[in-house]
Length: 168
Image (cartoon, rainbow, N blue to C red; front, side, top):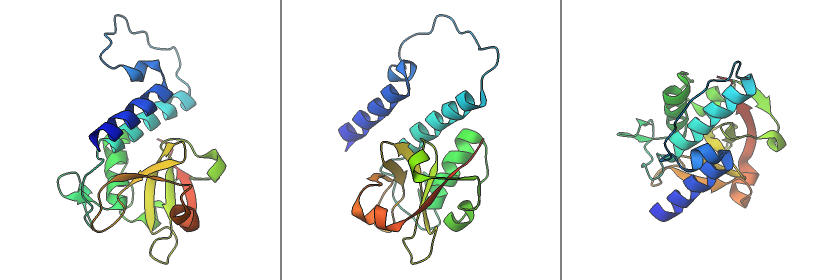
């Protein structure tokens, strides 16, 4: 499990750019861009969101859980990560989070977007954070732990409800 997680983090870090691939490389000079675009700021926060969320892989599921110490349910994980990285207080329930942000098409998913599913016979009853390459991280349910799943699997395809982008 540890090796798989490490390989995933390294793969995503490489995909996000060479600066993330080797954080041990010393930085000798830092120059701030004159005007960072909104897209660059969004991508930077999305990178932070996904990496922070992956740090919780293996944390046990707990209904109503909203911290790494207590465990997470799906909306608790999403809320905690967005609070820590973006300083945003999202609603507590997945269905309520599903009304926040910008609705986006499945083909337009970007890392950091939220993906929603019908897992309890009601729309938007489950939420996860999209990582890229058809993968998302979530707290799946009783007896489970925070994990990465594939959107293209039959189970998740059948239950997919949509996606939202939270602009921060």
